Amino acid sequence: MKGMSLLLAALILAPPASAQRRFRVGPVTSVIVLDEGSASEKFSSFGGTLAFLSSHDAETGVSIARYADLSSSSCERSLTFFGLDSYYYPVGADRVAPFASTQLGLARVRDEDPDLLFGTCLPSEPTNQIGIGFGLGVRVNVGNEIAGTVEGRFFQVPQSAIQALEARANISVAFGKRRVGELLQGTVGPALGVWIPLSGSLSGRGPLVGVRFRRDSRTAGTVGLQVDYVPLELTEACTACDPTPFAIFFAPGYETALLPRWGRFYGTVGVLIAGFPAEGPDRGIAQGAQGGLGADIYTGPGLMVNVNARVVWLRRTSGENAFAVQVAASLSPKLVHRKAGS
Image 1 (cartoon, one colour):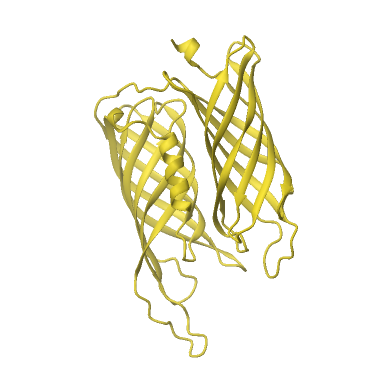
Image 2: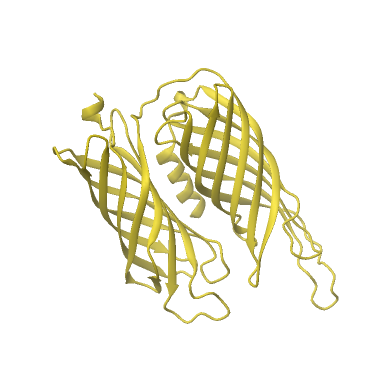
């Protein structure tokens, strides 16, 4: 279910395969932070990526990464990951370009457990599992031949101890011709919101801080995405865990709008993916759905204010269904829609 949710999110954000022309190739390195309960430990990885870009749409690629040591003890914990990557550029991939990323792939995991009686490591055979990642980043282009990316994301290999925050960096050599895709110029801006619980044991304990992406197509509706840092509080009893967890919400959706003179009035529906990196009953990835109404209010020749309210359903790792209303506001450059782009 988690893999299917992320695959659906990637399909919402990805361009048609026929739009792929330009590509880049280069090495990737990362620092990953694992929460081991009493402390957090940092580890590194190395690998490479090959990605194909349509200049005004998005990017699809493949990558390989080797995490040679992820263990806080003398027992081995290692990972080799083969991933399918999707990068979404709302304002194009030229110059300095923010993006949202999703990744789904095959993880080859070896994880030895310590023998508490004899103090040795219990032998373990490598296992094949599905790995999932999503996050935000910035791409910087130097001329037409060099592209570098820096990205922060949530990364998980289910059924293992790897549920973590990760910072990745890549520098690539770019080849090929640019091609204009089916999406118009998009917009991106900061967002601020609140979590109002309706049912379940998750309550908000502070503002939601995030980034909102949106982009119109030439022939259909608008593709939207909001990524939030969400501070939460458990209202249920919590033994040996942090009662104040936080999550990274990744909420892609499809918008259809009316276009009055003052801006846009729209409805949206989509999936919800939530990453919980810390120890506790929710650690890992939860999934759900979200939908609601919003309005873009033009405040000048180049800016707009967005206000929106969404009903959020989240299926927790514990099996509980949490429902809430998320109310948010954001500021961004004016969205180019079909009427203006035709």
